[in-house]
Length: 358
Image (cartoon, rainbow, N blue to C red; front, top):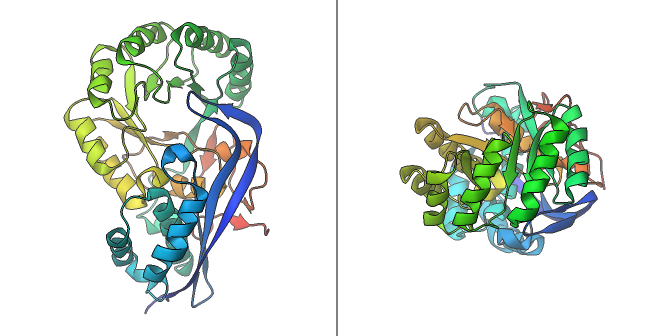
C-alpha cells in the first residue's frame, strides 16, 4: 500500500536572535538565519526540515529558498513519498551543490515519511543504537575571564566544551589556560580555529594545547589546504579534526586515505543528506577515524534530525555538537531539550518535535 504523494512544498525564512553573540575567527553571529521547509502529502501529513545558512556556507536563506521554489519543488510535487531515494537522485541530477537547500527539503520528506508510518525517524533509519547523545557546547571568543566563566557554567550542567579561538596564538593560549583552570581536569575540551591558523603556528599551538589536556584541535588551517592539514596532523601531539575541509564523501576519502586527520566533524546540512552522512560515518568507522555531528544555532528541527541520525548510526560518536538551539529565541518548534549534558532521542513520530505556530 502506497503511503501517499507529495502534494505541496512550502518554504519560510526564519530569523531567530541569539541570546548572546557567538564570535568565532570568521563570524560574529547575532541572529540565526535559516530556511524552514514544509512538505505536505495528499493524506495531509506534514513534515519539516531546516537548515541554517550564512555566506561562508556558500548559501544564504534567500538562495536556498529560490532553488527549492523554482528548481526542486517541480521535482518533488506529485511524487510518491516512498520513492524518496529515487526522488533524491533526481534532485541531485537537476541541481549540483546547494547541500543546505537539499538537506532541508530532504529532511522534510523524511519526517513526513516517518510520520506516515507512525514511527520515530530513528526507527525508520534502522533502529536505535543509543538512546541519547551527549552534548558539546560552544564557547564564544572573548576575554580569558569571560570565556572561563561561560565554560564554568556549562561544565556545571554536565556539558563538554568547544572553545572558539581567534587565530592569534598569543591571545588564544591564555584563553585556553583560563578555561581549563576554571573547569578542572576532567571536562572534555576541544578547540576550533575555523581555518584561522597556518600550519607552523597551528603545530606550535597544538603542542601547548596538549599541556592543558585539550583533546581535539578542529580545522586549524584553511579548508582547501590539505597538505597543511596533513602537516599539522603529523606533528601535533593531540587529535586533529576536519570540519570545513570535509564537504563531501570524496573529501572524506581523501582525508582518510592520506591520513590527514584523526576525526571528521560533519552534519546533514554540511554534506546535503542523511545518506551522505552515513556513508562518511561508515567510512570513518572502517578506518578507525572518529566521526561526530555538529550544527550551528537554529531551529531545533535541524538538531532533531541529527539526534535521530546519531542515535541510529553506530559509526557516529555519542558526543556531538548539538543543542545550540538553546542560545536563540523565537524557534517556532518545541519538543527537544538538553538535560544533564545530553539530548534524549525524541519518542514521537518523525522528528518528534512539534510546531508552536507562527
